[in-house]
Length: 155
Image 1: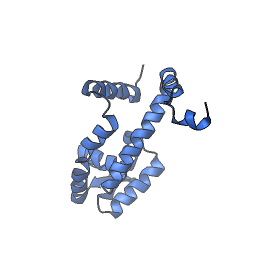
Image 2 (image 1 turned 90 degrees about the vertical axis):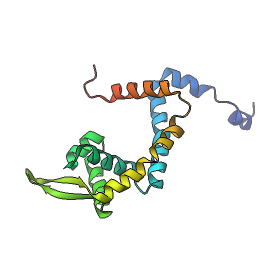
Image 3 (image 1 turned 90 degrees about the horizontal axis):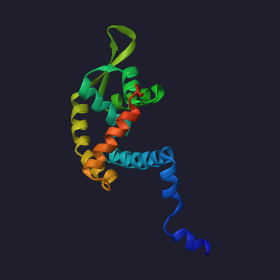
Image 4 (image 1 turned 45 degrees about the vertical axis):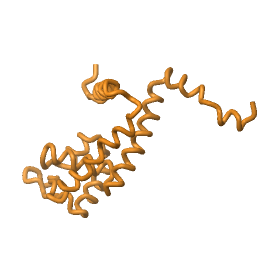
């Protein structure tokens, strides 16, 4: 078969690879979903990390950058930039932590709360686009399995 014909043919190897290597499948699926999430967040004027920080602050209240970094699995050096950008935009405020003057308490502002509410309206469409090939039961199963994989106390 000429090279051009092979390129246009239905993939036969990748499905077999995915069946043999769930690690590869998860990496490829993660990249696909990450691109969709970044595009959705960018359309809302936020990065995914920024959206997650606003969401966590709305849920748990003020906390340190270190806590945000650990809970959201965002590298500490990246978290500094995320908080810098959010603070410049007026979406969060950083104050010295009264219990530890070496750290900052990051607090959601009213503008941040409003931006988060707007950004959250796009999430259902993102999830439908990213996971539309799955039934609701399959989505629930995938969510449960991913939560199990990402729980630190595995085993």
